[in-house]
Structure formats: C-alpha cells, structure tokens
Length: 364
Ligand SMILES: [Zn+2]
Image (cartoon, rainbow, N blue to C red; front, side):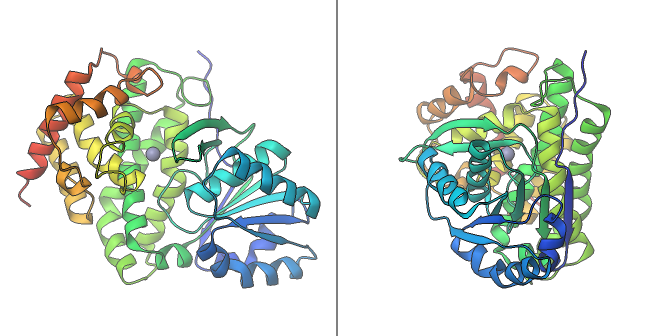
C-alpha cells in the first residue's frame, strides 16, 4: 500500500508574470532554449528577452510548426544542444508543451512550461504524448520528474480565444469523477502508487472550483478580463486538473472521449470538448443520481461545452458507428479497466445514447 504524490516543483500564476520569466527560472540554469508556436512566441518574445537579459542569462528561440513527432523532438534537441542550452522551455498549447517535454526526455535537462492557453493538462504533468506523421498517437513518454517550473500568465491566457478556456473546463470537469472511480476500484495512479488524501482532495477541489467560478470566469474571459474568478479557473484547469488526474487516475470519460474523437465530424473537437460530453456518458454508465448528472449537463450547457453528439459534430449517430468508438474506448490500453465492473462496448454505446438523449432533451 505505497502511496505516491507527484507534482511540478514550482507553479507561478498571475497577471503579466511573464515579465519576470528570468527570475523564476534562474535557479535552473542560465541558457534557456525556448520552443514555442508562432502565436506564443510573438506574445512572449519581448518580455522574455528583456527579463532574461536582466538576469544575466542568454536565451534562444525555436519556432515549432511540427506535428509533435519523435523526429520533431530530435531536431529540436539538436538545435538546443548546439546552442548549449541548460534549460528547455515550452511555450504554447498542449502539442508544443508535450514536444518540449520530449526534448527534455532526450536531453535530460530541467524544463519550464509556459502555457499560453488553459485548455490542457500538459503544463504540470510528467507525461507527454507523441504523434505519428499522420496525426495518430505514437506513444506516451513519462519524464523522470514533473516540470521544474510552470509559469501561467493569466493575462495571456485570458486574451487567448475563449474556446480554449472552455475546453480546459471540460477536461477539468471529469477529474473528480474519474478520481472517484479509481479510488473505489483501488487502482494505482500514474505515479505508480495508491491515491493520497491530498491527490483526491485536489481532484474534488477542481470540480468545486468550476461549479463556483466557472460561469463567471467564462463570461470575463469573453471580454479578455482577468477577474479573481478567472484566476481560480486557470488554476483549476492548469494545476488542479493536471495533478488531480496524475495522482488519481482516469476512467470512463477519457476512454469514451478518445473513442468519440475518432468518429467523422468529431475530429475538429478539442480534447476538453470531447471529455465534456463524455463525462455525461461516464455518469450515465456509472449510474450517478439524476441531480448530479443534471448539474454537469447544466454546467456544460451554460459555459458552451457540447452536451449532444450533434454538438460534437457527429452526424452518424447509428449504433454501428457509435460501436466503433466504443470498441476503442474499451481497448485494454484505455482506462475502462479503472472501473470496478466489466464494461462492454455495447454498454458504452448505450451510455452514449443515453447521455445524448439527456443532452438533447435538456431544458435550462
Ligand atoms: Zn484530459
């Protein structure tokens, strides 16, 4: 019964914190190599360059426009090595951050994450996804430790499109329910240990934070405003959801989301949008009480997360089509094994149909 808790070493969040970038990472080294997408680099370049110079450091930037493949990581690692980098920095969304982690995985250097959207769990977790040239999942790598420093600038995140912020809430919405599934079945977490009290509390806090602040935060982000509610939800999406899932585990919602994401029409959805609908199917599958399901559907509907297959973009709602997604959801590599009872593809299809019916018939 070994209990393990894991987390990033330092998490920094606030309005315009990027201006002190150098100060926050100076204990890690003096030559950061910064990998970012086009938008992220143009947003942070000036502040980062100034701050690095103020702290007697030297940095180099690399524009990332790849697919997150193994060869992308190898190419970037070569560039970082020729610069003499002693810190790897990822700036942007999930794909860029995961690629920066993959570079660190090859070079064994400290890593700093600068998320410019609050849509994924990538900034704080030790795991990174790598993809094939044709955008299929290649492998999941796990760093020896979680990121050393995470710098979440709430001004930058609030100015990014609201859709990312809302998708992040979809991903965060599932953390508590999947954690609860895992504690019931006694599964090990992603750190390879039993769930700690703090891990479980963080997962619950993620859910409670969304219910309390999610709607007002979304409305503020629509106006690019950083209110205290926005700060709460950025923390929930970026820190709580990430270490919540890593320290507790995943279950039906993520498995169903991965399955549904392969269906025609749904491939344009963000990860958190797929999880947002899939958590409703998860609750149906695990036979949650009506009030709890209604609360989740009401939340999704109000903030603009999909509550039906049509809203996910899935036009073919036939049983045969849904069964393709359900078979992927029940694949042994997915997380359905976290449930304490046997889940068949047919049960997943019925739960998705049931969730869709609830979503379609939902009246605010
Ligand atoms: Zn997720």
